[in-house]
Image 1: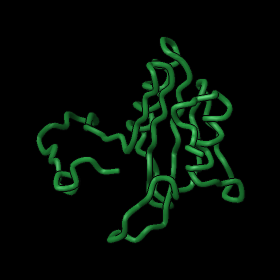
Image 2: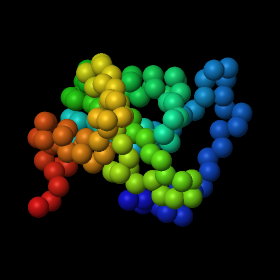
Image 3: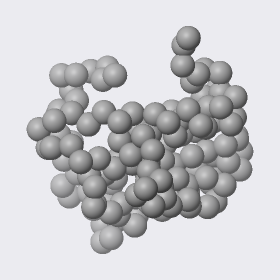
Length: 134
């Protein structure tokens, strides 16, 4: 769901904001449930790496959340969608997860759709607000 579709394609320019190796970054998606669970999504085109600074930021956000609130997950996803096509998050492939201060990296044969990865987290932690309606 895109809430403000007319603003979605508007570019945000950070020219002049960088200082040395410090640059702004983005988060592709984030879900917070009842101040207890945090799920962060980072989506890349297949073959693209997450920059070190962005990876560290996501890791540190998850670590901080887990110290004070509860379980946090950073789900790294990839897709092979053409530039002019829409990337549907639930159809991207989970390639890596950061949780409990550890990375879980999957081989391509073990990739699953993000929708399945989310379903596993929902079931494991009984997150009723994310359970699919019957």
